[in-house]
Image 1 (cartoon, rainbow, N blue to C red):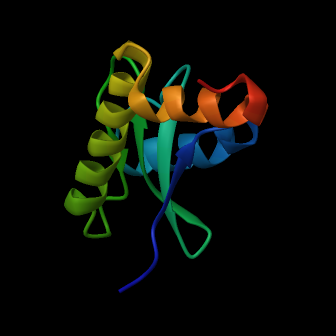
Image 2 (cartoon, rainbow, N blue to C red):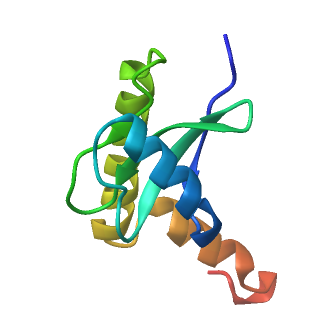
Length: 101
């Protein structure tokens, strides 16, 4: 099994996104996107917002696209949730010990 890296696309990914889109007969994502890489090669990308995922049609990427979709859902939930327990704990830990109740 190859390690897959999921990350946000950056400006320097544009040419690789264009290459991937051409392989998939699609348009490259415009705006924020997630990408999945293995062995320093981009295999799939998912626009954050609207648009369909793109993937290398010569690789088995269905599971990779599902992974990108799962990560996009997680990011969406993180943005829409009210201040969660982990954030509350983090803020409590950052206070000086004498300020804790």
